[in-house]
Structures are given as C-alpha cells and as structure tokens.
Amino acid sequence: MGEDYRHADLTPKQEAMLEFAEFLTVSPSSVTQTNVDVLRDAGWTDEDVIDIVHITALYNYQVRVAEGLGIELEEDKEEISARLSFSGKVAPKSFGSIAAHPGT
Image (cartoon, rainbow, N blue to C red):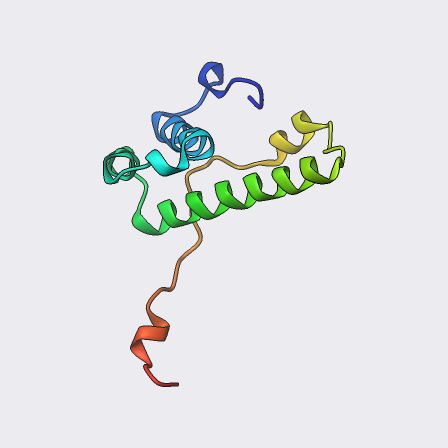
C-alpha cells in the first residue's frame, strides 16, 4: 500500500483521503473548497478533514526536516502500514471550547 494506494484494497472513502493527502503534499497552494467537498462527499466530517490536513502536514514537515539534515528514514514501511487502522472510526472531537469561554 505504501508504494501505490490506488491498487490496494481500500474503500472509496479511504482512497479519497489518500488522494487529498497526495494532492496537498504536491500542490498545497492549489487546494480549494472543491477538494474539501470531495472529502465530505466521501463521508469525512469537517473534524476529519482538519485531522487529515494536520497529519499530512506533520508527515511532510518531518520528511523535509529529515531530508534536509540527511537523516535516513525508517525502511520498514510495510510493518508500519500493517499496524495502521483504516476502519473509518474516528475519536470524538471537541471544538469551540475556547470560543465558549472568551477571556479566560
């Protein structure tokens, strides 16, 4: 899956997420509301989209720092991907607590 997710046995929802993450990685300034709407149409919530963007950005940052410093990244990607869960379950989110308590 790490080499080509398009030929992995993924759900359309998972493929939409990975396509978005790939597009965000290679063309971050080209992401539009339409791209986000595709994720929503695939079943991702707004909170999920925020998570997808954060995780993609964090991974890209870590890779670029490692490459910039000449650090070898972990080679055993298959073992790591086997531990990932693509069940579609998402932890509950809590947003707006700052807005709910202005001035604190």
